[in-house]
Length: 72
Image (cartoon, rainbow, N blue to C red; front, side, top):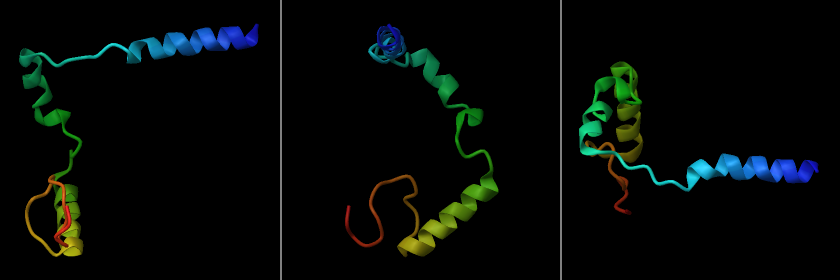
């Protein structure tokens, strides 16, 4: 009985994963707001970018794949 209850609960929990959610054009403006970013501290972001460029021996291109070694 416990196994059946656990299976039903697992199926109910996974039911929301099967629906594909799309972002409508009028909702993209809400996602572009500054409060929706993960980097809330510009000073910390500057430190991270400085460390990244120091380690990779390259400048710019933050947020783009690939490294300073020439391998993508």
